[in-house]
Amino acid sequence: MEESDFRKLAESPLTDVLKRAQLEGYVGKGDILNHLKSSALFFECILRQSLTLSNLDIVDIGSGGGLPGLVIALLLEDYPRASITLVEASKKRADFLEDAATYLKLNDRIKVFWGSAATYKKRNQNVTHNLGTARLFAGLPVTLEYLAPILSVSSKLIISAHSLDSIKTDNRFIEACNLLGIQYVSKEELDDHWFWIFQKVQNNDSRFPRDKEAIKLSPLFEANRDCE
Ligand SMILES: C[S@@+](CC[C@H](N)C(=O)[O-])C[C@H]1O[C@@H](n2cnc3c(N)ncnc32)[C@H](O)[C@@H]1O
Image (cartoon, rainbow, N blue to C red):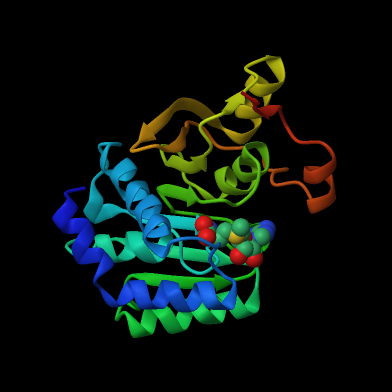
């Protein structure tokens, strides 16, 4: 993203919305421009996936105060048919997202679902989303287990990562990918921000996502955060 485009974004009403979200505790601490930047890089990452932007039907899980969902919605302004569904388990945060979408005049592009990603799946058995995102949602195995089942085959999954994150690519990982119907694509760095990229390549096993306890107690595979 050009510096001038980022400045335009930083000077838009979105920054005020994110500051309000931060005051409520829906966005993490620190310079709001850094949060904005990392979400704008999600969009850059989308641009690198050779997707048809006008057909995007995105689902973002654990949207919190709107990162990266609101940012992506705003950056898709030239693609009126593109849409994003924000799935958020907390009622207060989901209400905040609804109000933010109205304030930013993005109602035609943003849908908010109040409920967990598992409930979203239960209520929407025939999903049509063709791109999934998650920022700071949970560990990689958990995020993939919730995100993959709500995506159609061929979708890309873009998930925030830490530079030190790694996957133990053993048989468990291969089996987990088979069960979730996904394939590992890459771990990408953009401007010191990291992203896991996966692709859905076949239908997932219908038992997924498992219930919350099972997901917590027995993650499908091992992902590490190596210490330097
Ligand atoms: C750490 S916050 C991250 C929020 C935002 N994505 C960001 O980057 O600032 C995680 C969010 O996920 C929501 N959440 C937790 N479990 C969830 C679930 N199973 N389904 C949907 N949302 C969930 C929480 O309420 C919280 O808003």
